[in-house]
Length: 439
Ligand code: HAM
Image 1: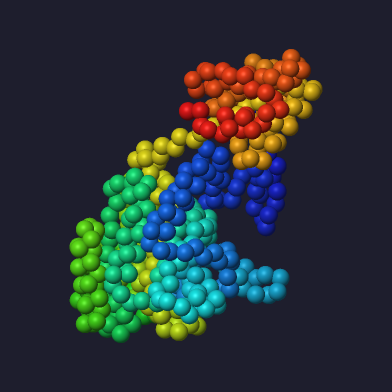
Image 2: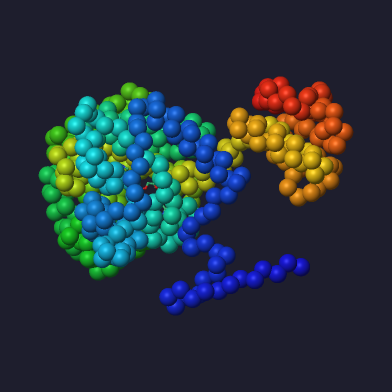
């Protein structure tokens, strides 16, 4: 019986086992990582087609960026940020999302000085202190695309089309685009008043957070996740009826382009999204495969954010895909079929001088980019052949004392079982043979 000794350590009052990762985080182990890399590759291919260039920002930023950008009264800023004071007494936050950091980088690096719009994408981990459950983690990965410098409604539609292309490239089905417009600060001011008038008589029926936000930011009451609050939202005023002429026209153009491109969507007047930076179009994509955490991505227009962060007025629109959730949805649809090739060559040796020769061959062929495996555990020839099979190696080369003395060994193609003699010092021929896939 194997006994695992778990060492418990005290960290600020609670005991943690060194062998368990923090709650809400995941390890991505070999066998799994290939799915992530494959998905990342598909994302890059689609971004290339749409002309988006990658941008990488730090994983942490000054806390104020998120307070100002996302909004003080949002759930993320009020409850979910990983914030700490660093040794220089600055307040630092692990990024909970990628849009505000990208906007900061856009301004700081003067990326808007050339032709507009500037189309950028990012891919990486985000951090939110949420209650972990299936599809909701404290560290998760987002792919995001953001187009800055144009108010064209067609750009809103391209921002919806791009992730849909990714979902389709992965083979995902059963997803739905939810669409709404939340107007501009002008028309939203009237809507805000209407919401306050509607919610005031319900004040004692909504949760504590909603009570606190009722006068400061009544829109947030519409995306409160507390069950008791949901019922009160049903009869709330509909934002579409409060849109000013310009916002209504923008929304109508977005819908015309969506229809023209045959992109199906569902209007959802309750969709407000959990960030204060949004203006006009907002959208979310949900998957029928996931439970309560069914959003596999979301985004919208944010025409005021660049100015809010300190840049010139710059309209912008973007979207972020939740990569962890996308993989969960693909798995539950059984849409993940990766066939990974094994090593090009497994060099079987008998130890001693034959191992030296095997090491030399492996070293040189690896330098040429080929995947070469050999034994490090003094295993028998039989066990090495078994290991080569298990790894699905395309070729096997057996080097015994006799082969070494004659400078001649047999190269076996593991797929069609054909064998051919090779000179051990003729690495050009060996490279050519094992460099082509034997499948
Ligand atoms: P978001 O809706 O908060 O938007 O996140 C986008 C996606 O990230 C969600 O639809 C979900 O799939 C995934 N996600 C969010 N939180 C978690 C979590 N705790 N665990 C696992 N997955 C999660 C944004 O972040 C905006 N920055 C999107 C955007 C880009 N808007 C404009 N540009």
